[in-house]
Image 1 (tube, chains in turn brown, cyan):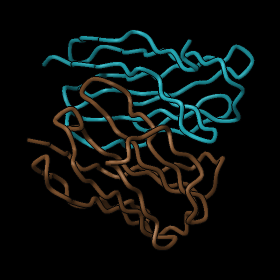
Image 2 (cartoon, chains in turn green, purple):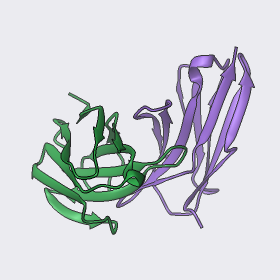
Image 3 (cartoon, rainbow over the protein chains, first blue to last red):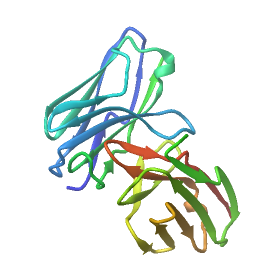
Length: 113
Length: 106
């Protein structure tokens, strides 16, 4: 298995909802990443987990809460989002940090209404 | 200043044309990635290279580590090549270029 699987592919949520994005990989990678991408912009790093510990938080608002329950799974919990949080959320993994063998998921298209 | 600069930002070509996208970077690296993203889609890794040249089908990527420059070439371009092409260099995170939006017209 050489993929990073993200679910759901599309999500529409209200500003008072609580939802979660899921990312899974079975390549034995020990670093996992969340990126946010707005239209026509490159991805922006949100969080990095290394060996299941949060190693980088790029000053992301607390309405985004990451969780890494085990080395294969990365979640992003969403609560009280704003319409400007609508974006493509990409997950990626790599064998370690720093490392060159990044693999990206296909993303979750999030719309906040 | 961005660590990774790409040019051009937008590119329109006729089917069959030879296409070149350029990438310059300022950080020290051992490898550079070329990525492809179709509209609304996830990111696919095309190449990871640390020296010389790599070829995959109609795609060719070159890198000059001393000059900190890489190019992505597409030969005999096709409408299905229409996508955003991004160069990126790894570190504690991935430093992305601004992307080149390519449209190939039949």
